[in-house]
Image 1: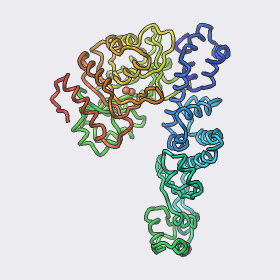
Image 2: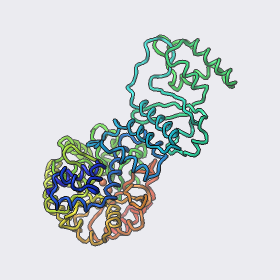
Image 3: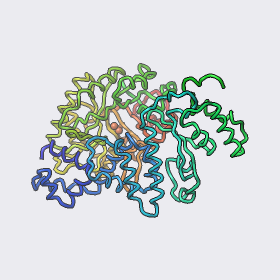
Image 4: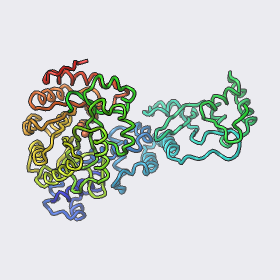
Length: 264
Length: 273
Ligand SMILES: [Fe+2]
Ligand SMILES: [Fe+2]
């Protein structure tokens, strides 16, 4: 077998669980597909199956870590090493990635992970994969310009959302499934600020979430102040409504669109 | 020239230039494609401390020659830092349009020697600098090899007239995983061709060993490092660290271990710190 043929076959084997299965389970098919002579087929079959399968996972994991790992860490932390390996190899069936296509395949991978979850963990996987898909969407959505309309609104690079778990539990990179299950239903609020490929997550409280929700679109300062006032009363907060607004303005989480940058 | 104890450059070192210069004799820089990024990262170190360049994506063992733009980018970096040498891995990771980020060991055959030597010689000519080849970790090799790994490497080094970047941790892991004697590997390598060492901590997960470049170098790896320093003319030890690191201080412990070995066999004046 020439070096060119060996390399073509090895590269294909390292990215294709379908091919390695075929090689070890139905060698004649793999032989036909690659035009292997009997002797060459025998050589290929001498490769240790378990080692090849581990290498396939290592290849996938390294590619993931180059492009998309921050967006699957939480989901994968719910699985053992063997489960992660199996999930990854199963996902790759029928999707031979000649190059690193993980960034484009990420949402599909998270959906796949959710669909493969054992029934008792189905809800947890659905929620956590949704959380990571949201993070990924935040990080990859194109930068939107400030609205034309004058007023105050959430900065275009800032995203926030409610999830059915305490936020301190899901912004961790390594999740504790038991703890999450126990606290399911306790709504948490997360703020996500993507910053040149990196992603920063912050816990916010319900009051902050409501204030941000009141200005998804530009509103006049009077309206924002009224919302802050209502929120401060509703939650009996020991702070001035205006301080609440100023904090968010200082952190560039709420910004003024043009025409509303004076006053206040 | 590069000699002494060095460390793989990390972005975490930025802002700690003084401390880095105090503790290392050279840096090893893993090649990045954009020259602007290289300048931004290495700026404060250029001209202050010798820098060797480590390339990861040329796939010198592939049938197809490395892409011109990659070779050109490597040349620009090597010229920028005036690298005493440039290293790449003795392996392949590309075939046609398929490319991975892991290294696959070449089959130990004459055809593979001819292919990789051809690419090394061409690269040496383009860069106008010495080339070192690094031994990679591997858990399998294509059946039908006609040489041992050590013999294969010796032939490549001699035919291409280049040096070896001996990754001692990789050698240790391969010896453990495949089951061979690391000293028989080392005895096959011409002693004057070992020019640089890599040492790093490794991890074990589910019975498999990984060159994870963590902190904490295994005593067996240190013992092999001692053997190499005692039996070859190698004069440069490099610590590789990819994890467990937030600042330069985190690498000091491993640096001191290597400094002690270096001083023991090379009588260097730089003190262990
Ligand atoms: Fe390397
Ligand atoms: Fe290395």
